[in-house]
Amino acid sequence: MPPESFVAVQPTFDQIEQELGAGMVPRIFRLLESQPDLLNHLWGQFRTVVLQGHLPRVLKEMVGLVVANATHCEYVRVVHLHSLTLQGVDQQALQAVSQGNYEAYGISRMARGALNFASTAVATRAAYANPTEGNSGPSWEQLRTSTAQALASIGLEAEEQLELVATVALFEQICTVANLLSLDPSQP
Image (tube, rainbow, N blue to C red; front, side, top):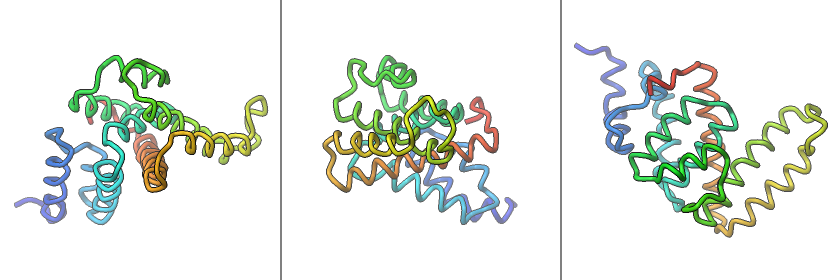
């Protein structure tokens, strides 16, 4: 007989496997087997932000790559490179995004703007956390202004802007969890 926690989370695991379309439940969700409330919370956030909404899932997962690169989160980088490959994203485009080259062939103007925004947003949040660190670069106030300008320049509707901001925030959260738990990217 399976443990009670497994029985409680099995419907969520089934939903994750089905809706992600990867044929598995990522480890970051499996780790929460003994915490059904946390599992449902994290999965609910991911499902709502990444799998639903107005912006394409592919774009949101590419934003996840940008956040993973900026936060040195190899686990999220590997998981979402795999997911994007399964979704048919061109390998050259993925390599370009992984290297911070958002001007690569095949990446739309809107996607380039969203990826630039994500990169700037992560740098801004880091500058908020350490406002006096690295005096040679722009101040957090300057970064905040350029982040707002980057978001406005994409040409998204207000609800799409909120969705993009929520996507960056969600991937920062997931990267924080993955990095603090030292999740092994070879065990997605």
